[in-house]
Image 1 (tube, rainbow, N blue to C red):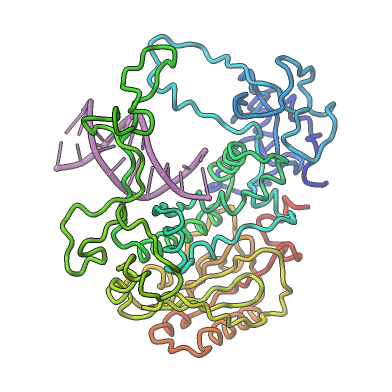
Image 2: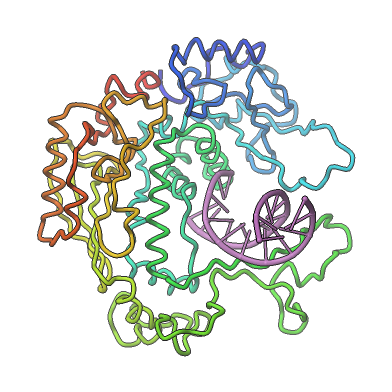
Length: 485
DNA sequence: TTGAATGAAAA
DNA sequence: TTTTCATTCAA
């Protein structure tokens, strides 16, 4: 069955929670425990990955019900227009967001007197109920995942150039933002929606309820890398959110707070007591600059405006405007460090960090004869140097959720510290691993002084190798297998 | 939308 | 002092 067909399994009319849950267990669990995998109870359905809309808080047999939100869903039908509870009678569509399957929201929540405090925190779930994570649902998408490894590994120079352009230091992406970014384009295509709010809701739902631990761990580690590189580029960055603005309770009422508090402060009327301030992404450390402070002397973000010539060059204006570019490097790069990235194409690139910033040495090589595939992401390892040991060390056997049930010790961080994207992970024969291991070592040995890097490649290599499931890499013992028939 | 970070308020 | 809560902001 193709991926985006209308649900024909009768779930729309599922008579009761219990019954549905039972059927879910019988049909999908097959006696296996999914203890650590946060499926909702709606089951995997027929492979559409979608469930019914519910606008009236009618459960339709689902435990987790999405309440659609008219403000965020365009192109919905008129109120009360849905005549059938069964999606079976609606026209097939390749978009799970089809209006034929949606109805406008009706808020039937009972009003509880006196309970108003959390009004703003009303949970707005996606209009689509996913029944499988996006990593599964969009597995066969022709739209590649965005390469968030490349993003997390942007060199210091790139990051500073971005700051120069935007005139602000952006926060590093957290694991969910990385995930969301990776899947945004796919999700748009899959939903046939080009709406940030919808993408956010769908990816949020997939992330929070559906994605297996391995996917989350992967983006967790990318987030760690992203955070570390951000820290490297901006050692004194400190998140400094704008002071919270009081909420407008009722736009028709007289504001409880001065108008100026809600927006830009003009010089004449704005914020005389300085209570509110517009958003800023970073601020100078409150402590007086130290000699070792890369922002030393008279430099400040606000004043410098980053109006230097070419941030990527080593020209004098750049270093004058960005003094830390020159001064901080020795502080944080006492020893160059390097890491290797396997991109899922059976190729490795070795990155080297140092005072001169990050250089990418494209030490690509074939591995296992694995053909090139869409997208990237595969394995990633950091090699020793500096203070980043937590990225460099093998963490030993990573607990694997019962969802994965790997037969051959499938840890997503293997004994070499390889960070393996679950999409490219499989469990198979040892001889394949030998190829990975030697190639990996070759990559590391490609013109570099490994130093402590040898530590990262020693030790036992488990029977893991990279496989692109789009090329048929899902093997019989893959936990995804049963859902991809 | 989730999650990190922040700061104020409450315990 | 510690915990809880609301808020900002990353795309």
